[in-house]
Each structure stands twice: as C-alpha cells, then as structure tokens.
Length: 70
Image (cartoon, rainbow, N blue to C red; front, side, top):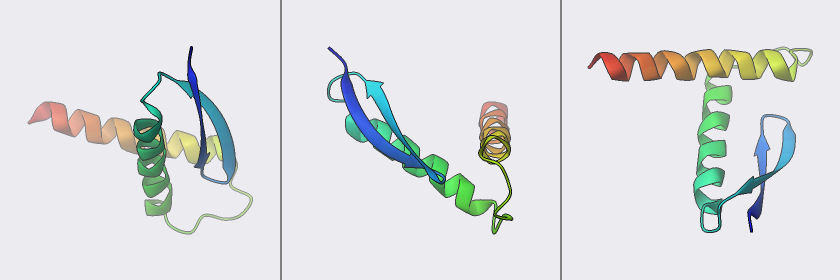
C-alpha cells in the first residue's frame, strides 16, 4: 500500500502517493522545486502555473546536463 503525502509546490497543494517511508524524501524534493521557483524571482501574478513549472523543469535539466559534463 502506498503512502500519501501533502506538499505545496508553487501556489498549489498536491496530495501525492509514494512508497512507505519515502514521505520525507518527497517533501524534500518539493522543497527543492520551491527553491527553484523562488530563484526565478518575482514573477507577475498572471504567470501561469504551467509556465512556472516549465521554467523550473528547464533550469533543473540544465543543472543535470552540467553535472553530467563533469
């Protein structure tokens, strides 16, 4: 049976399923995503959630690419 964990990403709350014992890891990952959102700076209120998450995904992929090059 899966565990459920509540996280806040950006302006929205999500209830996610994860493996038992993985709740803290999922919360930590959500915190990291929120740090990346914060690093984008002050975005206009009308910036859509999908645009924000796309921008975060791009910055995360860039970091992965950089790490793979080293």
